[in-house]
Image (spheres, rainbow, N blue to C red):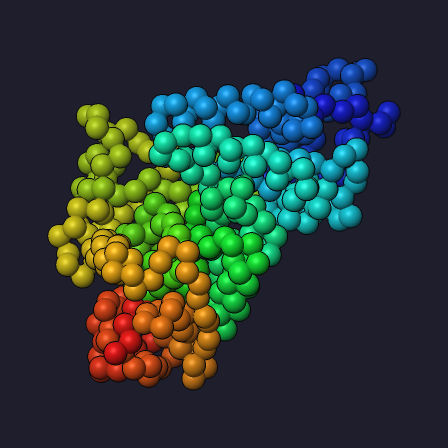
Length: 401
């Protein structure tokens, strides 16, 4: 049920495929044998062998896995690397060797094979048989026009918009990606699923410049995200404005670091629930406290959930307010779950996403204030210094007058 292949007599792997974590995507089954030439495939860690989806037994097995969880009442499932189930028939060499992190995207032989869509049609039929219907969310790291094909009406319900999650703080780039995603929505009928952070990339507060300005931009980006047309996902700790942590070399546990020299541990530090470090900021209930799997920085307590709950101006309180407002606006019909967006940039730095005739999201992404189009500001990431203007690194939801 996995990929096992005989390698050539010279002891090299069956083909030139590279692991996303660095090095060959193949490992010897019996590395100490002088005669056995069998290898197994792993696009990621050697501890994660790839299933051979061309074996019908694999599809049957996974339908049982889905039923197991759906029968226990889960609302849905996230499918990891959803575009890379099937590999090209015959497992031919990749046109390029690829590199760490890029090993999947640069190898068309392991990604976006047409046969994968039959799997998600089968799974969608299964989700439709449950009441309430269960949800399928795909991690589909492809360009928008390809990723949207995975969320056609008879396949998965949602797929993360990876072209958006990788953005820097730039109005033209945001608008360009927004238009791409809107075009894909119009072609395939699938609304985008927005995210600015996940467990694989640098946190937005650091990615957007770091320090106080990066924190302000991350807060503004998060508010903007929640106002865009389609679904939205918040990565754990993003609602606290957490920055990337520079984990000491000796404490890093990411297999990508061990094999390829790239670490994602800095976005995976256990959350600070309490200000006090005595319980590892709420991580441990034992006395003495157990150490978390990654070290928490000395400043972690100032970003704790309990601190945010007591501060009316905190990022957590902003997110709670935005989610409630989002719900109210949808109830009133100001926008709908599946509506689209029209994207533009005004005055070189003001990003606008129009969501119907009544509502738009604005983000000031330049160095100076930006004049807002006419309307009433419903919520903003930071206070407005002057009515009708949006300060740099700020975002607002606006209802047209």
